[in-house]
Length: 310
Ligand code: FO1
Image (cartoon, rainbow, N blue to C red; front, side):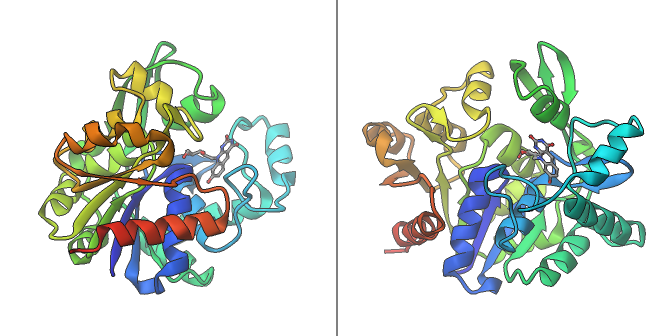
């Protein structure tokens, strides 16, 4: 089974790790959000790509959910002393990732090429494919003004209410050809349990990528990032509410209606299955909360199992 997984943030990354545990490397392509990317200290930082590289490479700091396990922050302290922005912390070893990526890109590599080279060095078999090589940057309209994504997410700890989302650069951006091809070649397209607005939204906003999903003959399944009315991590529930959606698995299913054939909701939301099915998709009730690495693999296997063509 060739799987193309759309992902960004913690939930999608954990499910990617689940698929990576149960599929041969080449059979998994992860299409990654780049709307969170930023330029910092002259370096290209790509948080969702980083999280995938570090998770699939077994290097992530699982407590924080970002950066490298055991990293130190000496360079960060020195940058702070120089008066550089200090609210976004790059660890010493993490800094090497951003320096190397930026170096490759200045020498002419695309983000896709730089990511592939780094994934290979880290021994990652799965293809980690940025949704686009062009700069598409998420901006959030909040009560505190229009903010760059990391300004909202990290500096302001996603406290301001989100009133709208803009994708700067979208008009001229082209989807990555590798990502489009991976979707076309997939037997199973999975929308991960990621924030539908700021993680999956910037991927599906690329017209060629959305068209590739719609044109795909694969089984298409989405996994709910909302369990019992709450996001497991991050502001997805509040963001859905302030943008006029229901902050429930059903609310997320409504956002994907017409795009997916199946929708996976957590055991805790079994009572919503009937309403999800009424949207014209199969509702699959599964344990979706991934506490351990084994949970990730089990969810990946279960998603493949329910999606197997009859
Ligand atoms: N998240 C934080 O909350 N604080 C940080 O200082 C921080 C630094 C950071 C550095 C590199 C990287 O790849 C990610 C980093 N993150 C940090 C995580 C991150 O930006 C967000 O969790 C995601 O963008 C949301 O998916």
